[in-house]
Each structure stands twice: as structure tokens, then as C-alpha cells.
Length: 326
Ligand code: CP
Image (cartoon, rainbow, N blue to C red; front, top):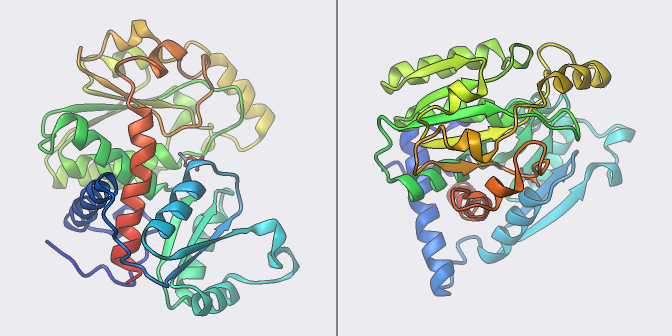
């Protein structure tokens, strides 16, 4: 077990090796148990986390903030529009200055071509760990909660089990591609066979696809791509179906919406779930467009694990913070 993750950044899913992710999961289960038993676990007594948000959040903000308090520390919510960022604060200045105030810096910035670079620039200037609360390429803390949830529901030996990471139709906005990209990078490392399903215009980044194939090869799991939601669901043990924008095709909102609107039948419903294994679980990081992306029948049904999945954000993030911010 690798235990020394002190001062490490977590920006891309591959920043931590599989063995290091296993350490995070191990600590996360222990923290989950301690919380259930009401046992104190103030590993970050007097420590502080600065959380800088350039985009809205329900779960990420709440779970990081609550998690820091449960670890005996404090998290400061910093909404970018209330800062001097638009008046000239640079990433280097933020890394230098926030790194002197806080014991960790967490950032959400999903603007295309800006967010990931922003996080890396802050990290280069910071003396404390920088944690990615979602950028335009990766959502690593969501993915840690996802693998934790899958192991809870399907056991720790996932070899030979199939996860379908499927695009789904949404009408609300063009959602980032970070969740499916994180999933295809992380899941093959745990032995899961990954099927990525999406219409042609919803491709993921070629370099991420290459890395996902490399991980699958390295960890002896399968990786395939299909352009048919139903074919993707066939025999799946884990159905992870969510929307993302056609951002590699266009970043124009109107054009993107026109493309999306051609695929309204890519909804997760009971009929499609019946194509999966009878014990398949349904996952979604939330928020979802209810009865557009997924029917309420599935979302609220017995195969759905979305609330356990959301809960595990808390435990997985506490584990990362406790290991990196000590
Ligand atoms: N899943 C997730 O990241 O949720 P929020 O956008 O509400 O933080």
C-alpha cells in the first residue's frame, strides 16, 4: 500500500497510480465507517481548504465543505465573480497567495480550453496540493466516488464485468465531457470492460481515447466504442448514461443544441435497462435532466444507485484531503 500522498495534486485521473487510488479507496471506506459509527476523525485539525468556483455546483461544494469540517478543518467557499480575478489576479498569484493562506486549493473551472490549464498553472505556483473539482477534461473526484460505489455494489474483483459509459440526450445545456473522459481513464485500471456509446458527433478527445486504450491494455481489460445506445447496454453490469455536449464537433451552443436534438431517443428507460444484466446498476453523477436524459422510473427504481454514488463523493474526497493535506 502506498501511503505517502502528502502534497500531491489531483488534477487528471492518472495523476494517482492505481495503487494510490486503492489507498484512497481504503481510507474512504474507513472514513465512511467512522462516520457511521460517530467516531471522531479530525485528521485535518486546524487545516483549511480554499475552494474556488468558476461554475455552479451542488454536490461538489457541499461534500468538500462538509468533508473538511468533519476532518476538523474548515473550507472557504470562494465564488470567482466575488474575487479580483477579473481585475487581474493571475493563476501564478493565486497559487502563490492562496497557497500561503490555505493547506489545499480546490478549483472548479470548466471553460473549454481554459479550465485545465488554469488548474495546472495554479498548481505550478502553489506550495500546497491543488485538487480538481472538475475542469473541462476531468472530474477525478466524481470518478473516485464512482469506483467506490461500483466496488460496494459489485465487489472488489471487477474483472470481466462490463460498464457502459453512454451518452444520453439532455435539453438543459451542453454538459462538459469530463465525466465520461474520467470514467474511460479510470475504470479499465480496475479490470472493468468499458463500452463507450455515443452518436458520431459526441466523440471524446483523441488523446484521452488513446490513454484509455493504453490503460485497458496495461490492465488487461477491454475497451470498445459503439454508436448505438441499445447495443451498448446489452449485458452491461453497470449502466452509466449521461449527457455531454458535442464539444469536439462544435462549441457553438445553438449548433450543439441542434445536433443534440437529433438524438432525443437516447434516454435511459426501463426498456433499455432490460437489455443490461438483470442485476445491473444505474449510475449518474447528477444533476440529470429527469424524464429527458433518464426516466424517473429508472432514476427512482431499484437498480438506481445515484444517492449512494452522491454520498460517496463525501467519503472519497475526505480520503484525498486527509492523505494529501496532512
Ligand atoms: N456531480 C457533480 O459534480 O455535481 P455538482 O455539479 O452539483 O457539484
